[in-house]
Image (cartoon, rainbow, N blue to C red; front, side, top):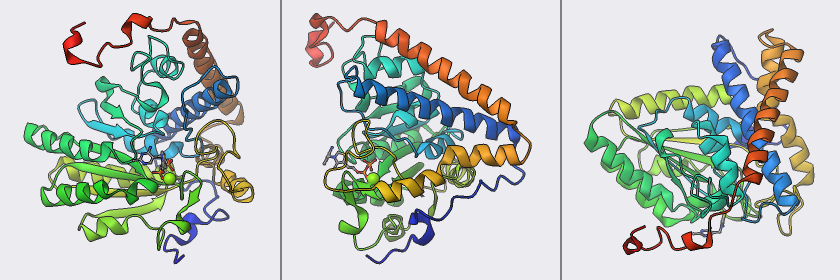
Length: 346
Ligand SMILES: Cc1ncc(C[n+]2csc(CCOP(=O)(O)OP(=O)(O)O)c2C)c(N)n1
Ligand SMILES: [Mg+2]
């Protein structure tokens, strides 16, 4: 394959502590905490899969936390965000509550989709998350529609469509990009390019690896960057979201990253027919969480003790929510057809 991503896709590159420059320390610490929260929540969900407490398919995005955190800090509750099958981070980064997420993954009535959706159907409308759906690329045209509605509402709200490199192989993505460009809609397309669609590396699926070339074709301004650098992603997202709010039309942000676990489930080696072991080992040195923590510690904005205390605090928060969610009741069988048929009327 002709790689245009270069070092961005190179597992041995881009592994130094982040260049945090004169970023606001309070913002960096908030980013670190949210990334730690997402990571710990997904680790615990993974443990639940291993213990067969979680029986819905769970797609973990461990290693990809920086992207959602960086994008979400520029969003507000009236924005309209859509995700896919790997969206725990999208939900939590927007400020979605932990307990209804974990309850949903466990199929409990207190879940954000009342226990009927599982890990792939998340919802936090008050935070702007209007839905995550596992039909690959399925929510991208919905986000375009939401962007059209936002434009008509005229209050400066934007839509965000999260999708993967694999989703770019669905025709509807191209229709969505075209319409958003022609109608100058306020939408940010966020492609989390983790180089894999299920077990297939991008070199087996596309003639080159830079997904933003599709945005170029539709004359949508695009940025391709290191998705494991929360500072860089935040800066790019801030510009594009501000532009969209101000009427500049759509933007396309391609964040190159890597998932640490298999396509679905808790194991690292679950991708059929591929051994990603050597590369995964190197990508772990590109850990978005550690690179930020190292930079904060080197810049004396965080002590090692304070970092340990932060990790312990996040762990306690996740374990308490997990304990409550495990103890919570399942929906009664009589609710099975609720909200399936409009005429059910309950
Ligand atoms: C329309 C459709 N085709 C196929 C699938 C099966 N499927 C689920 S996830 C996935 C891979 C998607 O890859 P990508 O978009 O890169 O997201 P990632 O899993 O890497 O986050 C596939 C093929 C599906 N859910 N929907
Ligand atoms: Mg992918």
